[in-house]
Length: 222
Image (tube, rainbow, N blue to C red):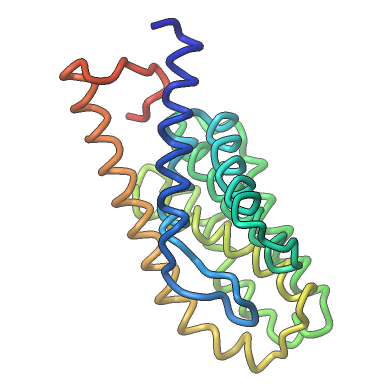
């Protein structure tokens, strides 16, 4: 199988698997009817196996196709939810490289902090952004640890979503304060889910390739 065909083949596998995982809800976002799904576990790892560009394309294709087939209205919440997983995918992919040259991804959580605290309500609770969204930056220094990398990825998604959410919905400071313990539990769960998903996919693909059920893909993460 030619290299391009193999990439398309694995892209199709990840996209279909991602779409299936998107159908299983985990919990709802505060202030909307939008739900977190198993895709929040699975989506970020796509770039580690497909490469950043194809991983990003796969994640966006899944989200866009889901909106299309469900005829979901393009509400503010729906649009905001399109982007966080994309940045988590990039973060996880770049942090998996042995020589990280794309350090610019660390600008994303820092920009999210500035965006959050520039909002009048965000200025009342700056510690909310600082305590969570500096984690992806700090995680860079322990990026070889799968759980730490997964935590950095999910916190990058949280940073992008949170920065957009405060401007879109103007949730009061009391809500952000109340979210602190929820976010801690939620993001630890998400980081664990991302790490487990990565290991399951990695060893499943390794087994299927070794049995010659699937072709070998050079991009498959180590």
